[in-house]
Length: 222
Image (cartoon, rainbow, N blue to C red; front, top):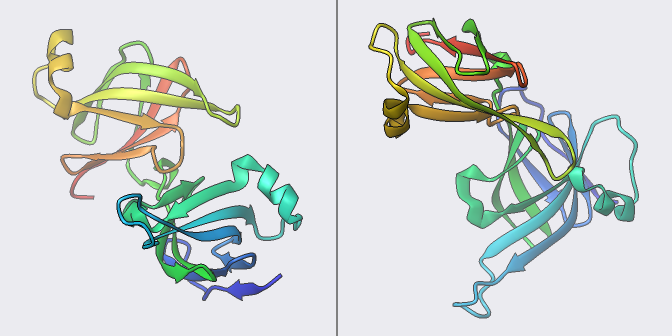
């Protein structure tokens, strides 16, 4: 199987990597295998394949190598990337994959670790899941809703909806909270969806499950 190695880098940086079709490449602590690389055509522009699609199998360095059939059957380890997705790219666990070039022979990607809530060096805040409210780092937070969801892989995921306002401002009524959509944010326990920025504040969701919401708040100046 053809192999390509990415240049070394710090864990917080984006790394460019070339993954040959049918081959693999190492980047950060991941091994990427391109199970499929193809050009997709727009219906409105027949014959012009200007969207590159790659289906990748992702595993950690040091884990056992698998056959192509076994990799294709590991749905939680598969990620599909397209050049049409732009800078948002596709995510797998704590990493973002963005197509920057390539053709049917290989796909060129940038792979970037996604900052998570546990990496924030802010002020901790614990709130009751049932309409809990509190203040930390100059931000007043009210819990609107906490929901447990099930992913397609059968894993449990928490989703929390919060109302945010600067500390010291009047507490809103329930009707006001519903009307203030620009002050409502939603976070999940999934890496990449567990941190949100609001008016310069960074809010990270650390967990707590059904009974408690554990957050970390970073001031705009920090």
